[in-house]
Image (cartoon, rainbow, N blue to C red; front, side):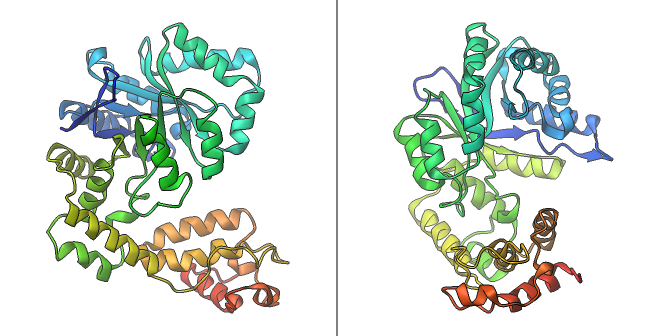
Length: 373
């Protein structure tokens, strides 16, 4: 297993971290035996970083991880969990959270404590209710060791949060396709420049980088027999400042593959790095509809989120995962913004700088997801 030292700190984390958000569950109940076996197998094969949150899996993730990992000497692994604070406003309720988490995890302290899923709105909530003051107090009490945050918003918000406090680490979404998403490569570089250790989530872009457009995937296979997963994880692990990448492993086969990659890790060489760039560029050029996401077409009189719906056509062509497309469409539908609401009024067509015949493509979206409304 490859381990990374956190700059000047006496911390060495395995490059592969176990993300505990995706334990297998049936009818809303975690398959505890299966999860515990996976966590223990990971630990016994060198994984020493385990990431969870109080809210994961309806509150079942922390207790399951605690039961799995607490049989081992406490100084042989690191626990990371998060303060999902956005529904809490009562100071007494806020202060009670840390003790609940310590009990869940069967430990006296948490190594890495994150302000969870920071965005502009949540940053304002954090300041309004002095959340960081509570977290700093917990550190003074020895209940947590290091304070960081995880992030889901744009670059400007990222920089505002980054400059607000002397953060000890940061968790971001980062992979070879997400140069511009959320904080993007600019935010990543800020962390590198400031020597703030980086934990990466979504290194496989929610599994999309494990299988995509076959013609483009062949660019990798013509170079070597390595799996697409191997290429994606090696790319992340080769990036400067990345201490650990998280993988939500809920099957033995997933764990075994990731252990092999992390245990035999070799950084990408110059030729391989160029090949990954070539593949990512080719994926970005895959296009069914030339929507740039400028949103000049909005608002739609019927409430359709036009750019988000159109993006599904390109996403499917890129990653060929109908399940993912249908899942995103269901989220759009929950917000009453699905393609099926289009009545072909063509108001959007007149406003589109690309002159896209938007209603025709919204029909294609409906056909793809089989929404006959």
